[in-house]
Length: 146
Image 1 (cartoon, rainbow, N blue to C red):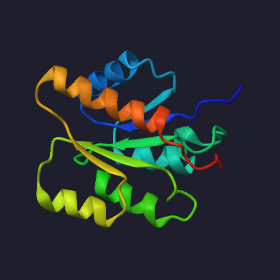
Image 2: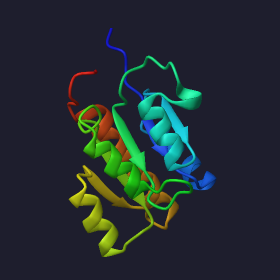
Image 3: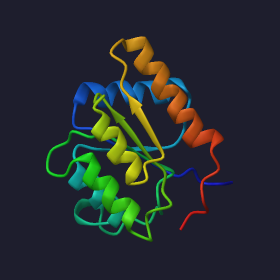
């Protein structure tokens, strides 16, 4: 049996994190979701540092990043991931409330795989995350686990 790779969700807003987790569950995704509350924790997970030291579960199937996070913002996490030969193959999706063109352009310049603006309405938010999770965790064929 193939072990499902994890999804990393980097979201500092507790309400948005819970909504995202609920939407993923409603899509019946069985991938474990690792919730980190800032960009520094996201990088710690990806590099196996600090509280994630010694993890042996390989690279995640997907990293979902908010842009506006404490310590290290989503743009910097994206920059580090996509500039590291060991991590650049991991799909990264920005899930943000930012509609600023400069954030969108900068994200794609750095190699983001998708940029999704969080809808304001709850039902639309759940639908957006359900679609996102279904595509990246089920439909998309990721590179082999490393």
